[in-house]
Image 1 (cartoon, rainbow, N blue to C red):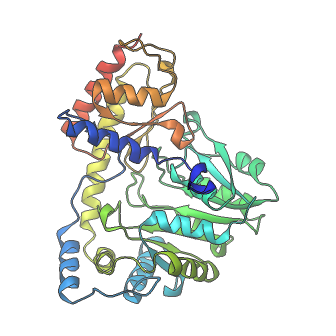
Image 2 (tube, rainbow, N blue to C red):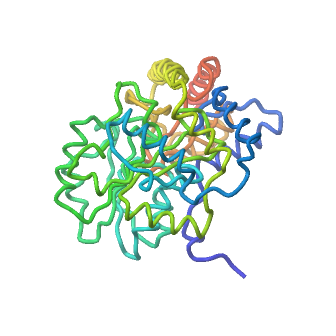
Length: 397
């Protein structure tokens, strides 16, 4: 017996693998600072937890409708209107087990073998693997640090072929923290508007963790409104990663397709998580601002700390909670143990084993010259982590 060709073709999630290695070292008694995980270090706000407790007492313990409770879907529509100026109806909302499932649902519902999906790089590690799962092909557009990790309209135009079926756009970005402005999105829309067969999957899970003010959604442009699938959820904005509640806002035809698909392999998401998410969207939003302010402070702290390390080149991320420094100046150097650093994966492993700081090599994100570091941890740990990183890098020769 052996596994399917689909599984053989997929890579293990590098972010989860590095987190696991970090945990293994911790179990051995080693003090590891984990900068590999894309997870807020805050607790879920009390009023949201209280809503979950009340839902349990009210016996919300049965199967929910596949797309989620109507009350939650209405709350999401209200959020989209209030915060984004976008009009959706509940039948266009599909709630799922995290935003990750929402992205995968959309891809599996539209892709056929040999279709192409445009994936700007750096990209989140799971995008290209999900495209593989759908038997389609990723067309990667590289965007380096010198262009703030954002693709240009010219690059987009050059990547489009007769087989292009979708594009995945993540803003604010994981892993870079880059954010597309309204003007930058408009320039991409000018290209996409001429291609009516391309679906835009807009991953906006980091919407509320941005340092430029109002979030700009590509769904705001009427030329594309009927071809945009917004993916979002409560994980990042409300510190609810473990609750596993994401959602898709899409044209009705795609929402119906996702419901059909999800109904066969997971059904509706957790009933309790849904009631908690409903309160997250309809309740007090000050918790979102409080966490964003903390991330903004940490962002500046980390950018300054990276700038103080010779050999690392970093941009100034405008969202999310990552820095993605270019580290290729260390390639070819030798560790004190005599090992050669051939790539960012080697560098990440060296920092873990010698500096006891967990990061993730950039190859998994489509940018092998970079390394991802999350600053979703305390200021004290960040200062200590980058002191360790600096000390470990000095030992390379």
